[in-house]
Image (cartoon, rainbow, N blue to C red; front, side):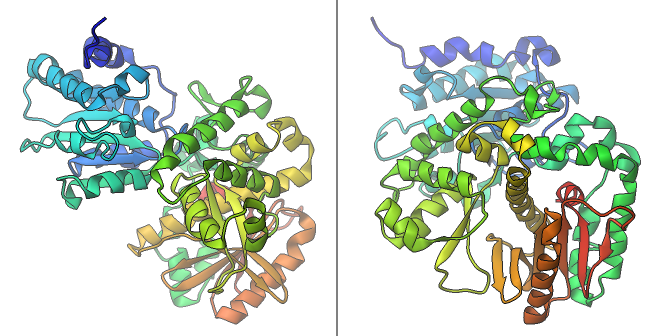
Length: 521
């Protein structure tokens, strides 16, 4: 039997690109586009992020929706009038045979596309080559030492209308390959894709809330007179409080409906709650094995992608760290020395190898104490509450029936959403910002999260349980006094009857409901 290196992918090329024949009828996608679709495709603006450079890399963990985004972009452009022939989609993870002599298969697929498909139409408009799971493409000459960077760089031509989109699990996979390729840094960009936030889950579940006056937007909290940066610059928080109240008033009539969905989102997280037919309304309605698949996807990602991180010797340790985080749920700090003894590695391996690798894969972040240059302990936060359930016991019923478990998951979701909130604020201010979110321990108690806008810290205290409010307020006030910052935020699980949901509580401390905080992040 003689095997042709290009046989498998070429044979299936039309199957993977059904829009060439069927147009819009080829698509079976969720009713609501993923949240990342809007800034990537710019449906209300000019061009798209895919066209800003020769190559755009979408990076994120398996199941985050990178493939869905590619297909949503193709559908949108065809619906807007683009010829279906402008889009070539090559999924290198769809069949192991595509990974045999994969660079040759890529070359032959593109050559066929150029001559047989793109050649049908005028080529003076953009066309797109979409390479899903590009890390499975190996260099044709030295597969043991070189990866996909060279074969993809070979797609670069003098034709400014060609744009390549690739997907991978981590930004390091993109940077490592393209640093040694002929491509200039200006020719490519990287965009992370994260699991859906609570607001995305809610809008998918209730499309009516995304339209009209009930669509609550965080934009005015990032820029403008009522924004967080304005409050930090002026020291006046009343305009911010007024802005937060107006946003609450937009959805006050449906606040009960929104709040009732918090527990289900906490149980499922932002990946398995996103279904083709819409959001899964209740964790009890999840398909059988949903948590098992989520756990297996993470395990596969670790064993397939981590070998690219040269400093990682024992991949199983990363899975064990995720399991520890799922059990601990960020409830308390873990001493580095305890982790050193548990894993039988040195501290540098934990702090400089294991935790950065998990952060690169958008699975877990290690959180250290604010304003402490030599932290002795770390808090482990998974980036998705569904993964915490999957790795602990895979039982959504436990979450729904155990308030302590619910409160722990609320802490995890608050961490993830605070990460996104801080990024959005600093991006709108065109200020550089990198994680981490940190915590702070003072004499009056602990502040759960601290992020900075420019050089000014913003403390966020979570009181999901009503009995925690006094301690949280005392810790926030102590932080404000220590660092002379004008603003603190207290997030509460439930507001008391008759109490103003958004209000100041103490000097410079703004309180708002947990569900509203998630909605605004």
